[in-house]
Image (tube, rainbow over all chains, first blue to last red; front, side):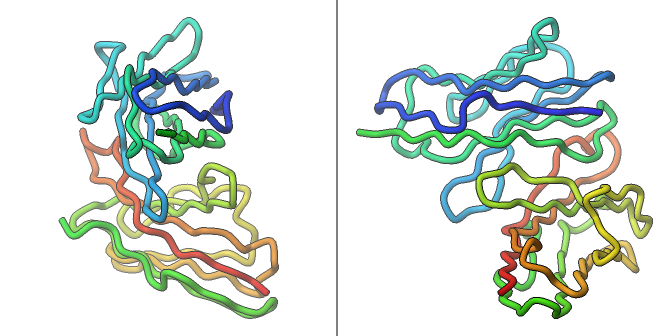
Length: 113
Length: 115
């Protein structure tokens, strides 16, 4: 069985500050890892994913996440956040053949001016 | 791609009534997933189809829930004898097969309120 734990339910930060959203997973098989974002009143959108290869993956809007197999983590980081990054962020895992996603509980990122 | 669409967007019903939701996946995506999301929680997997075959069902899916994808295109999710605990956002997602099967594209969801 797979599971995902997002260690922070809410993360308030000031604009232009760095942020890290933490995600740990457990699985007995090789996995794919994902971060999805849900902006207010919008559907889930894929932010970035790790399938294989380089353990550092990046999104087009400046987020990055690093797969750490020994620590079973996939933390999301951004060096300088914007007001527009305010959203709910979900970490998710699937088996390495795709299939169902197992989501964490979500982290609400609130960026304040 | 026009994206995944879901209908209706909102549904209010009384306890004990049956409801049916529809999901239209992205064209040519042969995998289709249903999830349920309650307030303050991440989405929970319910079931998924590859073409018209239902390949996996969650233990969360009680006998009151049934899903179909009769022609391998759109899917319906029916809840019989609704209960207040069924109130949630029901999400549909689709993905292609093969090397791009890892990425699921989500619809806007159907918000169900059971009074």
